Length: 331
Image 1 (cartoon, rainbow, N blue to C red):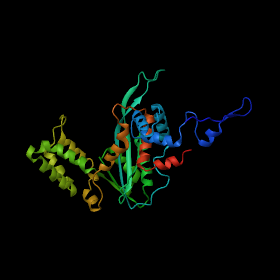
Image 2 (image 1 turned 180 degrees about the vertical axis):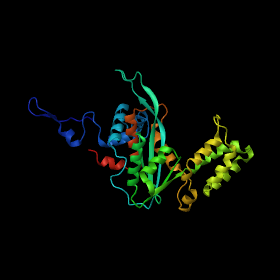
Image 3 (image 1 turned 90 degrees about the horizontal axis):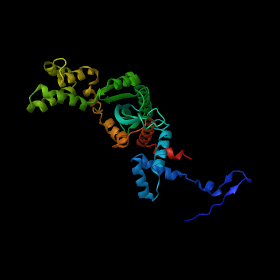
Image 4 (image 1 turned 120 degrees about the vertical axis):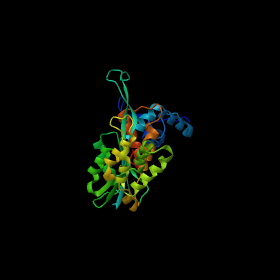
């Protein structure tokens, strides 16, 4: 349909006025909020080229890939990961943190920045917190330092209901920086527990050197039972006689022994189970897949760090149900 638009001008050389465009909220080469919302929706879930295909399929509109990229990243930079208001104070919080590597590109320094670019991997840090009686977790993410990640973790916990009387149940693989930041954030308010399945992997590897093949599963289950009953000392005693000599290339027994002995204060499985608290960190592992990896680890995709953070913001906000609220604040 062809539309004849009325054009007005203030004086011979004054500004041009377009009454229809102003009243309809449309502009030359502009994108309505409704179209932006569709573009960003697809761009947050698929490659920008695939998003263009989806827009064409569902709306019959040809949108340039570059326009999809620009609008998606612009909204990613402006969207808030968390709601402004906090949840009601929680009696017990589940708190987890972990990192995953994403592909990042650093441009060169010359006039043609495509030359001399570096392709490398950066750690995207994801954290979560939720009341123990709720299924939905709140997420936070950053490409920043461990200190930045700790600040984000604290903010997520506060939004999830952390107060002075809240007990915080931390879970994870026991990476030293995560344990340190947990203690910095929550101090005496909680305790950190090693993910039971990470410990079990160490024990399963050690079993290959401790007992013969047909007894490995039985031996591993015996050690798991001891851990669940807070008998980590007996597990260490079972490993002690089989420690490999120093400088051995493959030393799974020594690795398991060191992993447990250095984290002996993070093994209260009996206490966690008695309080009906989780002993596995599968929740944060799943979060990595659906919040970060599904979009930022597409085959062949490399990100500028600033663009990667914008996409992290967008996907984290969507996981936290901030999508609709973001669009109500847009003009």
